[in-house]
Image (cartoon, rainbow over all chains, first blue to last red; front, side):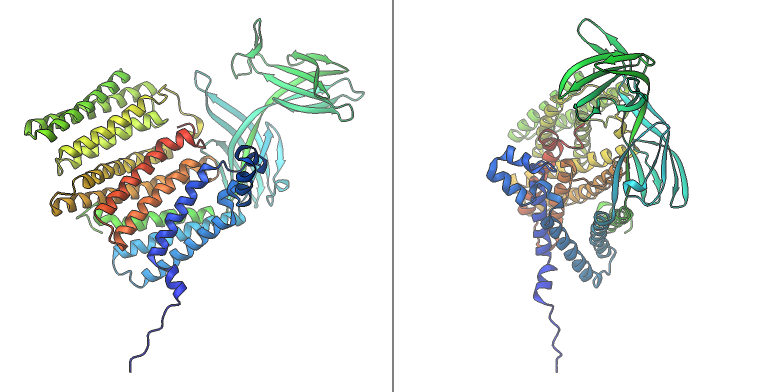
Length: 341
Length: 260
């Protein structure tokens, strides 16, 4: 008597078929392409303004404005991952040659990358901070478990035509996970502390002003092109522009270079949105604007840093390695005939 | 000097087109030799163009789309010269020369001023990323030329068609492997520079779409026996996607790669 072979449930057979995987891959490709045609991450009002009421509402309703974060897109990626794992499992039983083992490894690697990406999606945390030279900030208010960040110095290296060559922050991370770190952080060279990385992402000038019109003089820190609310009830706002290498001609004031060779601050005073006074002063000088008097005490750089804790990225990189190994094993003989494999 | 050499390369490639049109009309060994000579001279002229660029910029010419296109043209020509040793066809020379003249025309319309490397580009990953991209896309370009040839020469003996099909397959396998490396090096670099190994930037998204098209080719060939005309159509389509990824995205869909 012949024992009946156990049939695979039909939906599993369908999901694990190469035809389904291929169609799914092409489908995801087409959908991904469509995603690049719609500007991503804007406010819903943007789509209503630019695409009209009806199309705008469809875009927002289908989450096409955050295409790659939409639940249905991630569901498709999840199904792809599932299909790859089933395909890989089926190949596992047939992986007798290096070529087929390579193919198995390649498909498993894609699943590993997707699992790593999902891990990042669920557990990664990032925050942007700005820290002035000489300042220290605590990381816990930014959602990290502990640690303190100190910026000892910040430097911009320029090409002869004053295009920026590199931005460098001398950073110390202390008491993070029981350890201390010190490093020059620049673009392409983040500080690594376990799964936490700190990136150089932006910079700017920050100026110190003293409001001497108050009974008790008050120090104001204001960023270049920043605004500071002086009086909420009267809606008085102070604006500041930093001119590191101040110069003027008949028509305008400007900065000759980005270097602080002749630093000045341009101050503007607004009331209810209307300009009421303006002045340009050098460090140590005092300016009278309306009923206020300010002394320009000094200036320094601030460094914009991106902090990212991501436990999934190492799994993604492991997946990359496996992907390449799988590809090499699968195609080595074809690309380099007669050289082993 | 650089722009004169680029013009010379263009003229030489136009001459290759003319020579091979003449070869199609009147096949002669002399015209074949002229075509070879012109192709080698064009390569020499393009390499010299790059040499002047490197000397002028004092860095590898990987910083913008203009530089990438010149290197891409060089690489396509280099691999084409290798392929034509086993596939000496006037149509192949014609297809390659036509493609390269179009690419050089595009290059001449791109901003070409010498600029120093911005901070984000100062990484060894730049070299790995761009070098692999140049070779990968050159493989796809030549697969496209051969695919075109396959579709145009349906009356060739079966053995010759099979040989073209096999060459296309090998080029796609090499291109696909390198494109995988392009995406991986790009992702690792993005993690180093921006703290995000994948951000659905239009350029990286279209690279993934390109990868998907060639992955579909490899799957279809293996599991659905898509060989010959069907797969030739797929590599022709694939290269159109490559061209959109290279030029279309940069022009129409700005993103993190806007500087190229």
